[in-house]
Length: 147
Image (cartoon, rainbow, N blue to C red; front, side, top):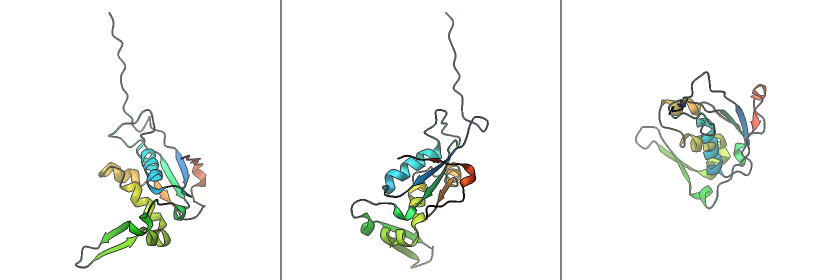
């Protein structure tokens, strides 16, 4: 009896086709939206996903200041930064961050969901977050990302 052998093909530069997606953050929950974006940046939505190869797509996020946090997170959630110097730790609540630097809120949420290695840093570079409704990536003809 003859056995059929099917080889599993690992993703490589020849196989991977990178698409562009645009996501509107208006009235989207931060964590749910970020996990969906992280999945697309990693490429886990593709049939040929390979863990050791970056086969993800590019994601553009617009209207970052209109993202929603549930519960008391606006007042309770703290973003900490540390300069490395004594007394150099600063904290800001989510409300302050969304008012002053709304892009950072989404960027940090997505970055925390990516691998903590060289490949994760490469995936993170494919994320573009903008405060307004406009973005400079029209030439890439991004598809709309549905949540």
